Length: 463
Ligand SMILES: NC(=O)c1ccc[n+]([C@@H]2O[C@H](COP(=O)([O-])OP(=O)(O)OC[C@H]3O[C@@H](n4cnc5c(N)ncnc54)[C@H](OP(=O)(O)O)[C@@H]3O)[C@@H](O)[C@H]2O)c1
Image: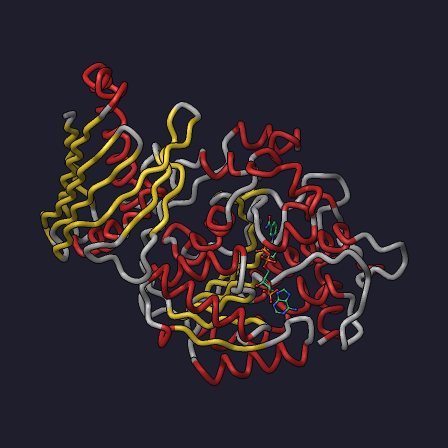
């Protein structure tokens, strides 16, 4: 029976370490041998909680099931795991070194059967390396870097050659990230998330709730909002008392303003605002306010909502995160035709131009509020399998299939921007996979200061 045993000392309190690891599905963030993991039992982890863990080995995906068999608060976790030809018993124990330092002892006893049983002794050195990498990853996740990672020379070359860079928009880019941990708790902070009923918004809301944020969810369909609350509480173990729901069709500026009023009435302090709701339309149509729909939901909605909540954001040293799109790289800002009236409608182009506007607006806010305590950053999530992508880009969806990210991978940079100490005070940047990226690659797509100024004038005229 191979036994792996590792000890690490990390600069985190014992309670933080225990809290992060008790939800064993975080293993997907720290063990490089794990592809994905999911908590299958709703609520906070307790004895009997089940986890599905998908291992990744030599290009194969191996499903494994774990059960939490012992949980002693801040002291000890025991799990039993099983897969085809393998059973495992994991014990993670926690010992205080001092107030901010914890010793974590990890023991895994593995038992192989069948063919694997015969070769197990020969696998011992390899298994030891796997165990070592897992605890090194655990230490990295619990001690997040306090400085921003910068683009490497390889990143810069790829950006110039476009296609290889775009290949990283698939799950490949996320999986090769060295730091995937999300362990910086934000207890008591208020996070407003638009579009939380599916895809990236739902994934971000789940993770922010697990990290301790109280949520205000802004969406249009009551049933979908109720289902989102159920999913978030099941994922995070939080109570539905920690989640408020605000109903608004974000295509209509009157309703965006009303949502902002409701939010202001509910809280006088916002630490996190995620402008995530967005959509790509096949055909041109106008909202009740006479706005083309892509520009309304992707640009005018964040404009009105954020402007309306500036005081609450200021009070909360707020972080505003605007969800843009890599498609933005292909389009310039078209101030001469913001509503896409002068040429035959092209949904992906209209969407990309609106997102280009959103990134330019993020820069405007970062400059305009430099003297206040609010930060504004935009990001793009890569290409993720969400209802939005399936519905609006079916050919693209079928082409990329399983290479697409899942929603959690797409939402990772949103949650990281909302919580990471490394982003404290950083404003006006455009992120992908936790690194600042260029805002324009192709000639003629860079937004000048004058264009930005005129964009804001146009936005002010709309609402
Ligand atoms: N998935 C990707 O690969 C990808 C790539 C680049 C950028 N993005 C961006 O990521 C964000 C999230 O997209 P997603 O892929 O997660 O799509 P999604 O699954 O379709 O989610 C979109 C969210 O926005 C909400 N929404 C749309 N129109 C609304 C309206 N008029 N009023 C209120 N809520 C509205 C949706 O609510 P309902 O449930 O009520 O429809 C849903 O909660 C968007 O800004 C999108 O542009 C996604």
